Amino acid sequence: MGAQRNSPITIATSPAKKSTTLQFLFNLDSKGCHSPDNKIQSLDSRNDELQLIIFYCTQLRLDDQESALKRLKLTQLLSIIKTSITPISDEIQESLYKMVASNLFRPLPPPSSSTVSVISCEVDDVIAAPSAAWQHLQIVYDILLRLISKKDVKSLQGEHSGGPRISNHGPPIGDHFIGRNFILNLLNLFNSDDPRERNAVKNVVHRIYSKFTFYRSFMRKSMTELLLYFIYESDQRQNGIGEILEIWGSIINGFMVPLKDEHKAFLSRVLIPLHKPKNMMVYHRQLAYCVSQYVQKEVELGCVVIGKILRCWPVTNCQKEVLLIGELEEIVESIDHGQYLKVALPLWTQIAKCIKSDNSQVAERALYICNNEQFMRVVSQDMEMVFPIVVEAIEKNLKSHWSTNVQQLTQNVKMLLDELEPVLYKKCLERMEKRELTTRLEEYTRRNRWERIEMAAIANNMEWFCRD
Image (cartoon, rainbow, N blue to C red; front, side, top):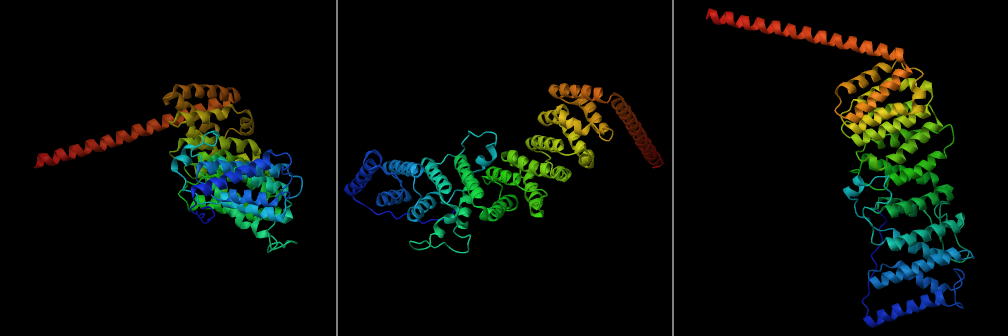
């Protein structure tokens, strides 16, 4: 998915020539780094040597010795950019961006299923598929961040003004800097298997979005297309969804109130469908944050979000159920009582099903909701509608649930609700007992009716048998 680049042409050289070239570069590095008289103070003081270093870092280096030297040269470039006092010239900047593009924009292998399904967003230190080239890529990403931070926005604009900017000293330079193709190639790097690279891409995209305001609409559209491709067209093994949603979280946080229709459409067309994939656990933390930002900005969206999440509730995925229960709990804390009443019945119906779940983790997570004081403060104002549903689930757990931990938690919740509404709890218990008694009587009547029909059939058969 990354931008394609031509493979570097390898020219066969004799060992002596290769050694001479390496020795020359080592000597050049020694002159640039260790000689006090020749120390590079800016990016323009030794233009020829800098161009040589940049050209060396642009090429692919497979040999261990050349790879180590390339890392040394990249470190030297980063140090020069950090300490340079004078502005970066257009010529040097053009070469630097070519070097960055040649190192970063490369074909990526398809993501492995183990990487996507096993890695959790809560385990940040786990590296599923570390890249062998990361020791170089890390420095290149740092160089790119420094270039974006130091250079003026207008000189990097590129394609925004409808064409490349014309330099006073030569040919157009805009096409070699931050343009739309550069941004698209950068977004494609989110599909890397290495989480360290995805985090570096996220930082660069954050910086570009905050600095280049004229690209914000284009970047939002491009990231939306990546998410839609993941939902509807891919096999849902794509990496980087959590990092993209993390960027969206900061974008949504800056939306003005009232929200625009296009922003609400992103919630319904992208964020809600992202709850459906089976590997949602990988990016759920960032997804829940994005949804909560919408609800905090416009409380009216709370009941809409709850209703749509309940529609895509998983049937057999217990891990997703646990996460969705927590997300619903956070949303209910943010909405007012009037919005809660619109979704109270379907919400507690689903929570009651989770309380009665045979999976102990789902049942425990559903029961822990009742220990949330802020959640109970919202729902306790009108409990008559949902109390019978909760009481029935609690009593069923106490009678037949296999887990002792769930039974203990259920007993604690029963005591809590009994203290909160003792009269209402007693009424619900009496109604439940009457309903159970009515059900048993109906079952007894049905069985007696079928037994009479069966006895009549047997008698009828015996009568026909005797006649024969």
